[in-house]
Image (cartoon, rainbow, N blue to C red; front, top):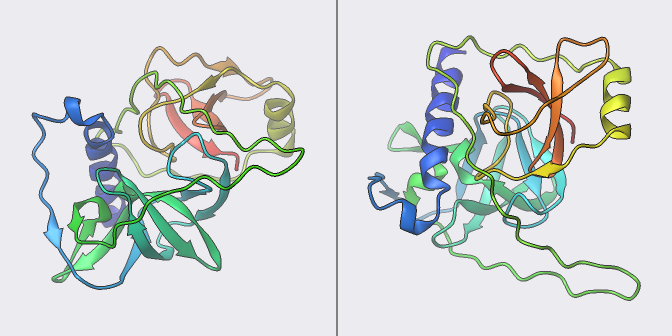
Length: 222
């Protein structure tokens, strides 16, 4: 548990810097490791699988904590990688996946020479709209403090989900990917949930349940 918590905290802290545009990363030094083989990676936290390389694309599945996914390739200059997990092929944020290199786990974002891939949006079909608009990012996720206790997450009561789905909030997009344990910045407005100690927001395309005191994401509705 301690190892998982440490990996997640490290990933969250690094993602805040690495998910910035290239112009904002000039002061960040990142160690990369070369590996020339097909890579199997492990999710350090429940991780969204999306239909395209970005938080604006729909969630089509999830990799559970410690779930093993095959990295099919990564977009050069991006933190998004194409993956395959249990028959689902999509895109995942590489900062929250690790692979064993020379006997130690490294974030996939630090591994060089993974197969390069590109993304082409699927062609539009009659009667449907497939255009994805790149969102304007409102800020960055806040990494949890190193002394934070590991999250103990249980599915909330169905009534909570019903209320959140029936009362959507304005969509907010933050750099990177939303994961359980990430903190929301102060300018992300939270709404109360009746008869609940939690509040909620819609972040990166999904409704999330948030602990008000810490502003940490406690549960993601996929």
